[in-house]
Image (cartoon, rainbow, N blue to C red; front, side, top):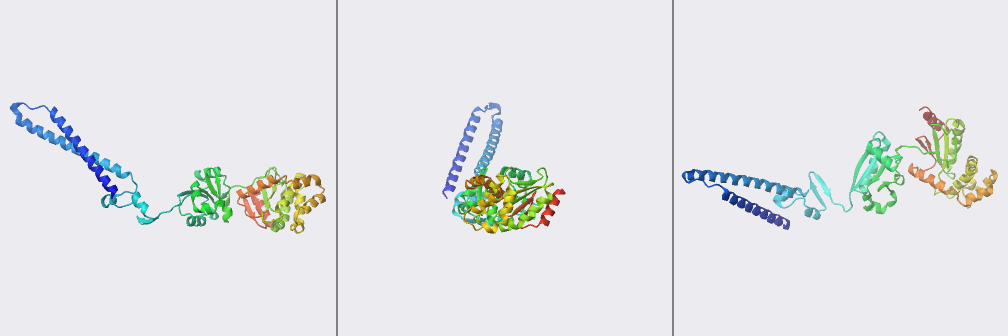
Length: 390
């Protein structure tokens, strides 16, 4: 009501000011008007009166138009002010919105939230059924109803920009505006998000969201033990844990592939230790120390062959004894293992695995073709032959 009275008062003041301006201008014009001669005074007075009346009408019309423009400008200033509010004194003004938690308009129901609006982008592949982010988006809208989703295809210009900016390796991929940090979900599950380039990336691996598509494959670095043709277009990379029983089952098939294709394919082994296995980290360190002396593959064979022997051990004695059996320099080996000299190398592999959303071992890449779990030699042969044929 106070807002309406203030508006009416301002409107009255504006009208009075316009009227005063008209009177002053008319008075000035009448004073400068040339008086008619006496012989045709009556006729000229009639012409004069008609001219004055015309001028007054024109000025009134100009001022009326100016008033309309002025009032329209005042009304456009508020997005939610409409005709019904002007007539009835109600509608969607800021004052009325502050009083409502829910209201209906144009067939939709609008609900007020304390949380901020959170713009987000999801990168996917429209042609990839496994890349469909719908299920994740349904869950997100339940726990974070103020998200605003932008769906981006990975091969669009926008998609390419985001992939380069955030080093995207898997689809679907979820990027949030930093406003997400002010939501209740972020407060309760901050570990699901990782800050990157002024925004927040969601770790789908922690949510258990399966990878729909890999956009790239792991590279083989100088620190990774490898065998075969380094110039080959086909790279086979296995992420494996020495204490993992499934990895032990797979390893003979992997070694068979090396023997069969080492002239055509490059093979690499990445030590991915698993936190739930108590001897996993030390066995990976031991293998990396053997690698420093050029005996990684022999040491890996020994670890898998003797897995049941050392897996429940309380110390690293077995690992040192295997170095002796393989005729390694035991002093250097012990210094390397005890000092965890190659820990940074193993940490880098963990980080790389996270980037590829690898959630378990063994995981095998034949270029960007991915196999998980125990894979037979026949299946690996098919995958390798398919890539060689490209």
